[in-house]
Image 1 (cartoon, rainbow, N blue to C red):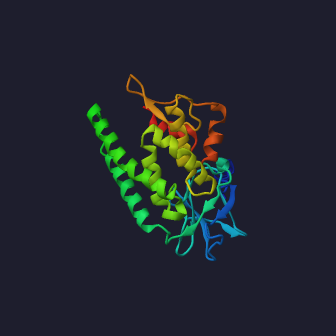
Image 2 (image 1 turned 180 degrees about the vertical axis):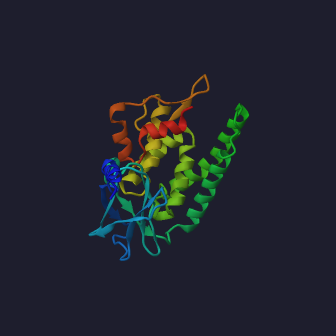
Image 3 (image 1 turned 90 degrees about the vertical axis):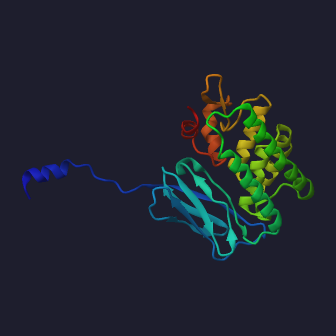
Length: 268
């Protein structure tokens, strides 16, 4: 080999293989008390590379991911469904439990009603003008009230819509309606949300946003840094947050991305 080429090769840094350093593990829960036999766990990658497959044993999953990167963690089983988990930084994600439930939910008519209302909630928010006036906000508030009333009726009759009762899309619709409801209504719903989350029947990131909104509405510092406001100069800034030193640890425990990543997307 040419001596100059040999020296060049010696000078090149060695390329280390991709480090798989973060092991995630958690319990899989089912409202039936039993898990499907064909259940599998895998992580979808944002960089479009092949999925990463984990293992399941004795009602727990294990999966090893690169210690950095964003992933969507999924469970899969025929005729069963499970809400996905979003992993922002595997090294700090912690243990995230799953709920898996039969796809044929007990309350299909209720699920359909909630999904319809959730779509209406999002439709009006995708058409917000660049400079909305007071009349627009009044119309939006009136539309939100139209959906709050039927959700209140549903809660009175059946309790908070649980994931295994209506499916995770419909359960998320119920949360959207409550989150955009009046302060009194959201505060009334919050204990029901907490109870559902303890049973893995509500998404933790959604619960975190509702906790913060109630704190903000009560004039207290928020806990998870999810709420932002527009100041008199038209700039979007985070509402005051308690204990900033531990903020990302609290956010990770609720399945939220690091605050700095979140802040960059919202502030202007």
